[in-house]
Image (cartoon, rainbow, N blue to C red):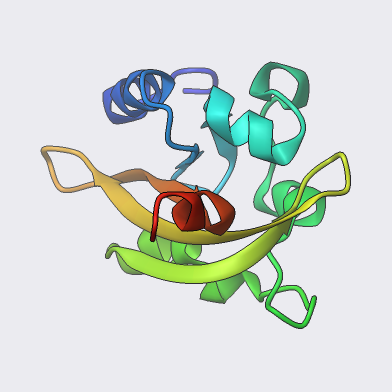
Length: 137
């Protein structure tokens, strides 16, 4: 039913709202349905301002890009792998904020699976590498 979200997406959004690690949440079709305040700080725009975005829209808005500045194909993104293959995935890449800043990040994505085994979406948690260096990482 349109407008109705799965319990898994609701609970994942609640979790992401309560952590300070930047994170994205997408539904089973890859539509960005939420990102937390920390992600908004990196992206240069709060989720409340951006709203839901298709995979093409969030890819065009934020990237990601390889270390040569080339867009990374959608099928190679950790979030896509988590959605399509139902397994965790990890990568390093760059994103661009709405303010023009570039951020080198590490991304880990996990599929969201319901108790009946159905895929409900995926979440991606990312860590800015500049912060990792500040903490000795």
